[in-house]
Image (tube, rainbow, N blue to C red; front, top):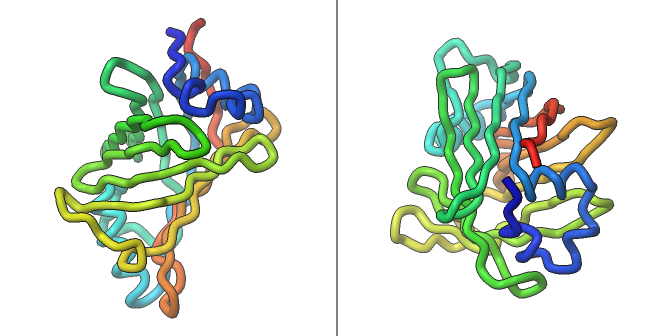
Length: 190
């Protein structure tokens, strides 16, 4: 079902996104495939696993520092906003609700994932969608950005596949965790 929530937020810049990203965010769809979930070593890995668990990403005692996991994502819109339901290994559901505020260049998105809320904007680079964190809060407590790990997150289309990366790191400690991969994309019916 067509929804202009995302295209309205981007305005004229929406046309700068890859056509498959446009379609995915106008009509919804599903993504699926094996992705790599990896953690830092030592203290950074321990912190990464705690952060990943808070986000709903699978953490088990058998999970190595780098493991392949199955990821299925359902993307859809309704009156509440833009929904992303990520299912890791058919056992760990990570739900996000994205709410648009205003419009580019001054607008932003509010992402609610569990107890964490992120204030995000988007940079379009070579038809790709690159998230940039502007603020965050845990429950009702606003957290300064310097307190939160540095993040990098993007989604692009490459050879017809949806390729993405989400990663967190801390100065001095380095990588906490990341998950990334190429997913097949099934667009919803128009």
